[in-house]
Image 1 (cartoon, one colour):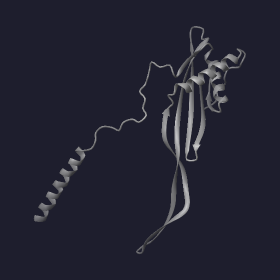
Image 2 (cartoon, rainbow, N blue to C red):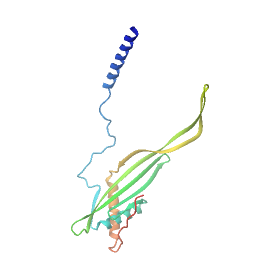
Image 3 (cartoon, helix red, strand yellow):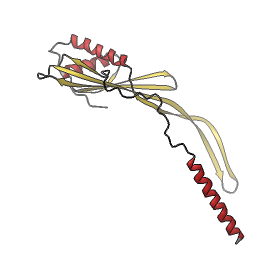
Image 4 (spheres, rainbow, N blue to C red):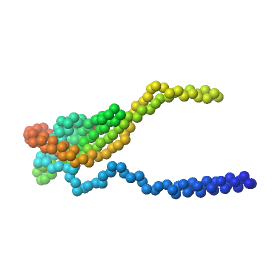
Length: 193
């Protein structure tokens, strides 16, 4: 009987302590690091061109190809291209551009290009391998081996918001549009990879 009362008291004390610990948890979420609020009055990601939409997308394709980007999808309305960087042996960066071309005006001889770039960052994580041997009744033995496995782990993904990046792309697109004749064949669709 005394043992039962002691166990009951300990259970009540443990419950009170657990509830007290829960009430001291910080209910506010962690702050967003590097977050930049949207500026919907900005024109960083858009540029108007005096060319049909398919010609504008062809200029975007050529501009990205000229800078070493690999085109992964291309139509008369959209171009997607990627480029990979390795700033150091343990750090990898992938930059993906997407340009969407939309017709403007009644004759559709003008267009607007909307561009966005996504930067994904990866690091190499090394995992040591180990082997263990267990014998019932005696125990087990774990030995580290010299081998290791490397894996890529994504550590960040963000939309590039630097206006100069888009300015350079749009200027290069304008140069390619200026050099294109109306006889240049329109862009053919390339399936996404």
